[in-house]
Length: 77
Picture (cartoon, rainbow, N blue to C red):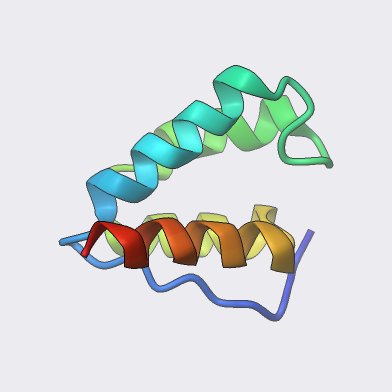
Protein backbone atom coordinates (compact mmCIF):
# COMPACT_ATOMS: atom_id res chain seq x y z
CA UNK A 1 0.00 0.00 0.00
CA UNK A 2 2.34 2.74 -1.18
CA UNK A 3 1.20 6.26 -0.41
CA UNK A 4 2.35 9.76 -1.20
CA UNK A 5 2.26 10.97 2.41
CA UNK A 6 5.55 10.89 4.19
CA UNK A 7 5.87 10.54 7.92
CA UNK A 8 9.00 12.12 9.30
CA UNK A 9 10.01 9.99 12.24
CA UNK A 10 13.29 11.17 13.72
CA UNK A 11 15.53 9.59 16.33
CA UNK A 12 13.88 11.90 18.87
CA UNK A 13 10.34 10.83 17.93
CA UNK A 14 11.08 7.14 17.29
CA UNK A 15 9.91 5.94 20.70
CA UNK A 16 6.64 7.90 20.49
CA UNK A 17 5.95 6.64 16.97
CA UNK A 18 6.67 3.02 17.88
CA UNK A 19 4.47 3.19 20.96
CA UNK A 20 1.57 4.60 18.92
CA UNK A 21 1.96 2.06 16.12
CA UNK A 22 2.25 -0.87 18.53
CA UNK A 23 -0.93 0.28 20.25
CA UNK A 24 -2.75 0.34 16.90
CA UNK A 25 -1.76 -3.28 16.28
CA UNK A 26 -2.99 -4.27 19.73
CA UNK A 27 -6.39 -2.59 19.57
CA UNK A 28 -7.21 -3.03 15.87
CA UNK A 29 -6.66 -6.53 14.50
CA UNK A 30 -7.30 -5.27 10.95
CA UNK A 31 -4.72 -2.47 11.11
CA UNK A 32 -3.33 -1.54 8.64
CA UNK A 33 -6.04 -2.55 6.20
CA UNK A 34 -3.91 -4.62 3.81
CA UNK A 35 -2.05 -7.66 5.14
CA UNK A 36 -2.01 -6.60 8.81
CA UNK A 37 -0.03 -9.64 10.03
CA UNK A 38 2.70 -9.10 7.46
CA UNK A 39 2.76 -5.39 8.29
CA UNK A 40 3.15 -6.18 11.98
CA UNK A 41 5.99 -8.64 11.36
CA UNK A 42 7.81 -6.07 9.24
CA UNK A 43 7.17 -3.40 11.88
CA UNK A 44 8.85 -5.55 14.51
CA UNK A 45 11.91 -5.82 12.26
CA UNK A 46 12.01 -2.15 11.24
CA UNK A 47 11.12 -0.32 14.45
CA UNK A 48 14.75 -0.07 15.54
CA UNK A 49 15.65 3.01 13.51
CA UNK A 50 13.89 6.15 12.35
CA UNK A 51 14.93 5.62 8.74
CA UNK A 52 13.61 2.07 8.62
CA UNK A 53 10.37 3.07 10.33
CA UNK A 54 9.85 5.87 7.81
CA UNK A 55 10.15 3.32 5.01
CA UNK A 56 7.69 1.04 6.81
CA UNK A 57 5.20 3.91 7.14
CA UNK A 58 5.48 4.72 3.44
CA UNK A 59 4.76 1.13 2.57
CA UNK A 60 1.95 0.33 4.99
CA UNK A 61 0.11 3.47 6.09
CA UNK A 62 -2.45 5.35 4.06
CA UNK A 63 -2.59 9.15 4.04
CA UNK A 64 -5.03 9.35 6.95
CA UNK A 65 -2.96 7.03 9.11
CA UNK A 66 0.16 9.06 8.28
CA UNK A 67 -1.58 12.27 9.37
CA UNK A 68 -2.64 10.67 12.66
CA UNK A 69 0.91 9.52 13.35
CA UNK A 70 2.29 12.97 12.46
CA UNK A 71 -0.19 14.53 14.92
CA UNK A 72 0.87 12.16 17.68
CA UNK A 73 4.51 13.03 17.05
CA UNK A 74 3.77 16.79 17.04
CA UNK A 75 1.87 16.51 20.32
CA UNK A 76 4.83 14.83 21.97
CA UNK A 77 7.26 17.65 21.19
